[in-house]
Length: 139
Image (cartoon, rainbow, N blue to C red; front, side):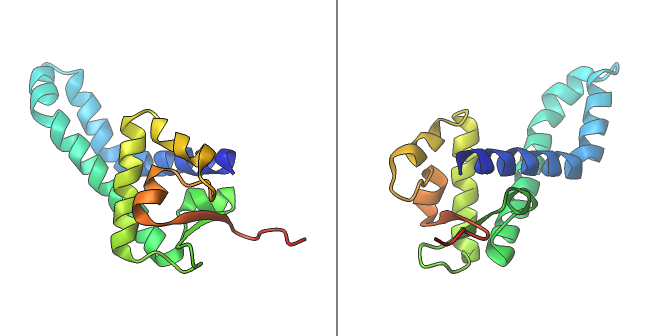
């Protein structure tokens, strides 16, 4: 399941980057212009904040409404409560914060998924969620 989660994570990064493409192109053009100092010092933080807001909204809305992002659909996984229900929006938002922590630690926060019974990463533990297969094979 770790490979599926990685595929979903990377796919969602590509999607949120595509959503941010107009702003990123504008920012990069400014970095390579005569006003590069203004762009570097004045616009770096706002661009990062906008990216974080776009990613948080993308993830939290999809987790709470459909139990999966587009990356999760492609990987064949869903994010649910331990009881099997959809995550409420507040818990989806907590999961996004946990994903941000995982990103900031370069994935080190995923290590807990190796030894927890339900293979929960830090984002799953703080939001009381589990990642399940879309259509598990029954024996």
